[in-house]
Image (tube, rainbow, N blue to C red; front, side, top):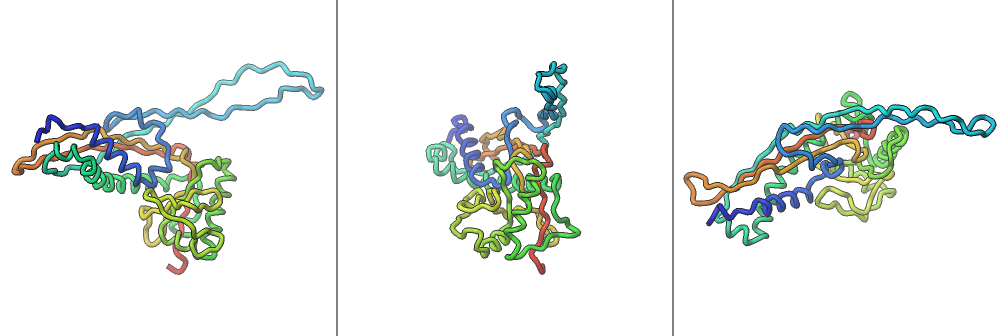
Length: 281
């Protein structure tokens, strides 16, 4: 064994690859500022351009008008703070032997990525509360049954349309019971499969790419389903540290790693919080 031969890029690449396969909520947000973070506590400034006025060029008799002075474009600035950090720490019998066996590295990183991914998805899912479009509430949740499960999603799409939200890249993340109800509706194809990242392949409703997750926020049987586009939420995560060490009282090697991340809703109008429950529950 030789800790000095440890290859951090090998382990971190496998961790990231396995993580990307499992994330559900983190796969429907934008990662525009991910390359700008280096460590916990980093802050990223997000500039958003305000509306631009459109003016008439022709007069009533069809003659061109004299152009007005150019308007000054306004902008607002938001701040994405990398304020969350998680770590892993596990033992391996021989780092050199592990690195020589990519499958072994994959297996170790697969375990670590599953745990980290679950935490990240729960974290991003919690931001549904900041949605600009709210349908139902914890006080008055929408009752869902087979007869209306499909229609409710169509209505959410209409809400986004009314908010002038692009139809490109729309998603909705539903719990397993909701998928079960859709599966009993003849308008929803049953020729689908749920992929590792939650995508319900081969089926969508009203332009939404559907995803299934057990991390849909729930309290007292009331579920907060998130729908919208990836422009609504920005997320940035980074493996900032991964290194080997020799623990005391053992002849094994160990690997520890640090993952930092932050999330912010930057376009609330492009995000829906659909609070619902199983009818009769």
